[in-house]
Length: 72
Image (cartoon, rainbow, N blue to C red; front, side, top):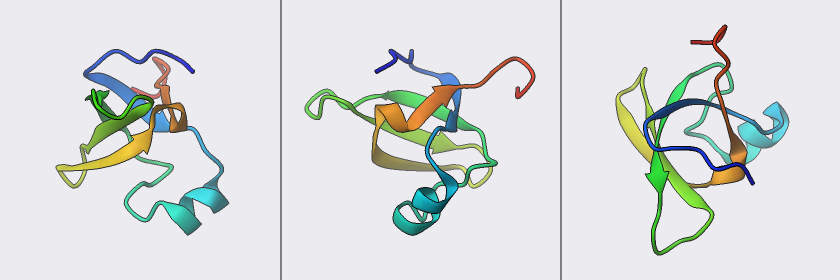
């Protein structure tokens, strides 16, 4: 599992079919702001959707990856 720092831009890192079936609030093409891990739920995090301006979670931290410079 990667250690993503708070307030980092991230993308979803799971298969689009799984995403569509199980995660209705997440979209593969969107960029999210990784807020932080949840202290009482190790391995889980909250993210901010910059398009809809909503906070979503909890999600598994491993379901996200840090954006590359080209994606920003």
